[in-house]
Image 1 (cartoon, rainbow, N blue to C red):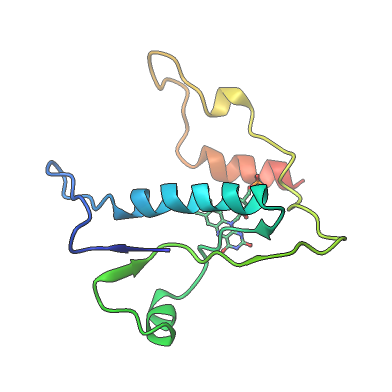
Image 2: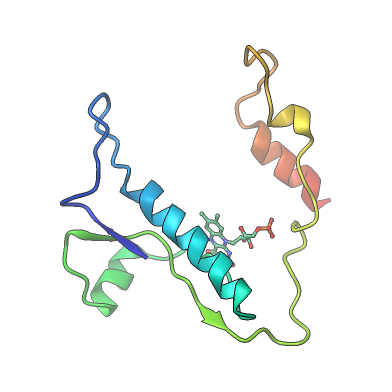
Amino acid sequence: MCYDSTVSWKRPYDKVDMGVVDASIVTTHMILQVTNLGLGSTWVGHFNADIIKKNLELPEYLVPVALLPIGYLRSDSAPHQLHGKRYDINDTVFFNSFEGITQGKNDEGQRDLLK
Ligand SMILES: Cc1cc2nc3c(=O)[nH]c(=O)nc-3n(C[C@H](O)[C@H](O)[C@H](O)COP(=O)(O)O)c2cc1C
């Protein structure tokens, strides 16, 4: 999944390129449809973009965001060990102020979940 950086919307206030957001929305819907068809997939964001661009001969203006392998699930495949674990809601939802939020808290939470 790529976005075209020549037409993606750049937020005027801070010039943030929203192409990643657009590509992520499409990728999410593709995963839902893949599942609906009885197939399996997983979002792969851990890749070397330069190698992907070279191997897929992408034009410079196409920015790769996600790889989406699609296939039939093995009968013994299982979700990641963190799949059924969730952060405490008090670490992710705040009302009226962000009082109590700690920078890096989610990294800490992830380590807790892995225990
Ligand atoms: C931005 C992003 C990048 C991801 N990159 C990878 C990846 O490189 N390799 C991988 O095996 N899974 C990757 N995943 C999939 C996650 O490991 C996880 O399986 C998926 O988000 C489902 O989460 P859940 O099991 O908590 O429902 C990625 C997910 C997201 C949202």
